[in-house]
Image 1 (cartoon, rainbow, N blue to C red):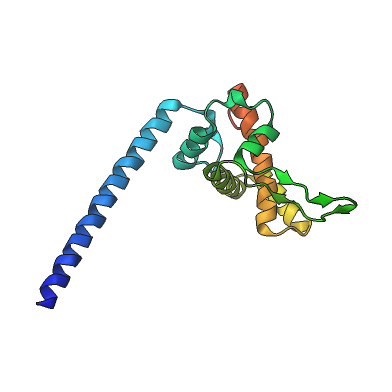
Image 2 (spheres, rainbow, N blue to C red):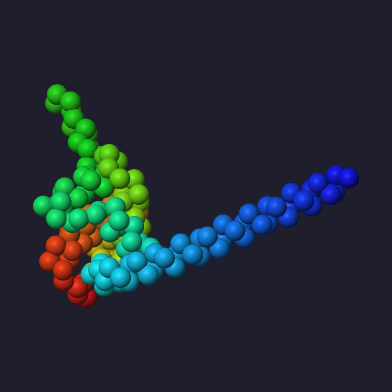
Length: 163
């Protein structure tokens, strides 16, 4: 008797997994079609795929809301928090993490992908690591640079052309 119950549970679990996989495939196809329809200059950046591009564009919304890169960085929660009190000034600063968690994650992920696919960003990342920064700290600096470039691309509707 116990084997019958277990086999029913296994069959139902497999059916649920297959349903979720088909829904995921359908959603991925929809995202690809939607990003292609937008024809955004963000897709000219090497290393930016359709999913990262869609997430960045979706979270940013209208780029005209951000007059400079520091406002976009603050919106993403990638701005630095200065820790000081009286005469004390901390030697390290951390990112604020106040903004959109999804945008912050996507920008960090995109910065890593771009640094893997573009020599300029790779050299910048490597220079930060050579200065003694950890991987994630160097990646944060690279994300800052990526946001500055991204803001310029989206505001002026120009394609990515760095070597």
